[in-house]
Length: 586
Image (cartoon, rainbow, N blue to C red; front, side, top):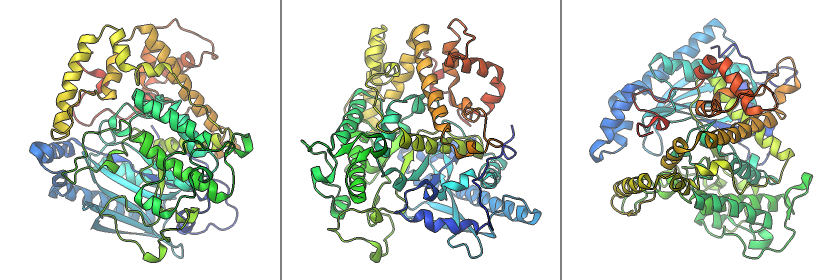
């Protein structure tokens, strides 16, 4: 399969090309919210059997994760990969490769503010302002890259995607490090400033709530680190309610009072108004969102984001048992990140997400009693998409990220998304226990509750005495017990939802304006994301030959291109671990 030869078409740029890093200062400015000034963050991960062995050895018998992060062999591998990246780029420069967009590269290493070793590759352009930095460090079971901020426009440039392929994907592969579904992932961030206009943030959350297949069957598989918004009944209800409150005007400053820097610093005053006055939110197509000044629009959306984190994202998050008041391990803020969409990094200048965060220039911190304003937004404030399985190539990653950007742009043109109260996929999610009982799985449910109680006590250090079953466990229990007809119906809903989302989003892809470069098939770089289990479910149906039957049309395409499509999917594990949908009791 070719990666570098599949070209993306960059936006036209008449005249002499500026230094490649010239855009970095502009995208860091929190005030311009147009997509030309948006930035993204990329965090692909890679692992090997050797790393998995070291992780297991370092974390058994109550050892600390830091034993893995600082292990001499892990640090040696980390350093070797970074050196190879540096040499690869320097050799490519001497050959005159087109992806050498920067004038020089420098490597150094350090301990980050959280005490973890990091390798840095700094790319410079003459007269081009700040450096573009690629960071590499250990994370549980993997080596993880961090590239942030990356100007969004760079992802439309085939040379930059080729650079990512050559350094971030090909170099680790030469050390036996590969992407997989079970270890790490490929989460990415988009600048928060891009989502705090109009009703985009609320519409984006409602849109994800309507498409649970993103976190379960397409962009990712069910996992606690990227838990679906609809994973449990309480979680689904919380998201539905907070979206309703947004459109009632419950977070508008005219309903709750003008929010201040002090409230952001001390995490208070972000609850919804009990009885907001009418007319604070507009549902008009071109004016959708909070009424009032630009500051009021920003304040409404910022307060809503904080409320989502506290009132919805924290309902049944992944790894909920871990926070313990008598230890510094895994504070609640970190646990709250375990969601398919994460607002933990949406903060203002001066806030510290963790006590170990570095001190800031005091001259940049706003006055404590100042009303919240767009210029107070931290330059790295972001909206993170965590429901992203690992990607097998840089182009694969770029297309996944651009899909989310184009979806946001589509929602700006089609605002006021109405969340679906019920979906067939709820049978596997919020309604999973009831479904399992209805299918005669009462005995199995009792066993799962016993296992869950033991797990919760052990994971919480004895604090959590509960038989709450993780929703990801219930998901596969129910899926494999469903009659073939019900599985096919769920597959239809999931495939139809995903394909429609991709097709609609493609209408906002600027590359389609140049028909000589635009992909004729919007699903060309997304069809492989559909879980093969969905096609297995459709195989039980009577075949259909009409293209109007969209799920069956995609099934026929899958059968024709099966080898190619499966090759684009990362393997489940680089070790011997079985996939959860292949559990023996199924």
